[in-house]
Image (cartoon, rainbow, N blue to C red; front, side, top):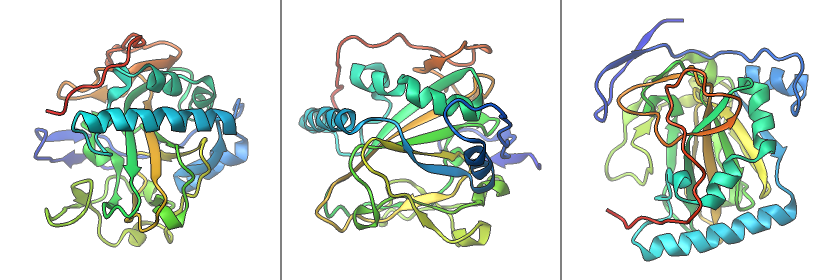
Length: 280
């Protein structure tokens, strides 16, 4: 795999190794061998049951309350980003052993969650998420982060479910354009002609409490929510401790299983009191 250079307005120029690392696991605890083979081939897995219907309803109620508190302090529906160090309920979700079981099958016995983000598309929201690869936003090497996308609401095509380009993770980092300011793109990157790098888009339809997982190299995105149904998901980013963060990244991380073998990541203590910051 060719070592590529990553350039960004936000970070200095970095040289990183960005290639897909196939999972080798002949004795998974949660997933099946067929699922691991599918993840290696397609770059994602979907409709993995994690939380019961009752647990999912409780998570939804907690998010509804959190959303109202955040809006009262000036935040919008996409601003609840990286709050796992101040929200006990979010820390608890991330640390759930059922999620760690899935991640251990894909990443190994030592697991760190270094980021979390609620993506909430309100009814009739015009915001879109353009085609992109997660790794293009993150100054780290190597490319080994796996995103867990937990459905807070039921999600399907009618309320803007995420779409993925299967097999696009096999191409390394793909060139992208900066999005125009006039676009309703939540992110600032966009990949043209994504189907050139894989097969046709697949919609990730989930019931509340289910998760989807994908490689940081998989192309994905979502359209506007033209329905009267909210669409909320929680992303959690998991890595192996040996991944190296640059430019001061690596703080506010959660060790969900095993040990922090390389000390690149600052592990936080579980928060005990909910704290919602004022919008800056």
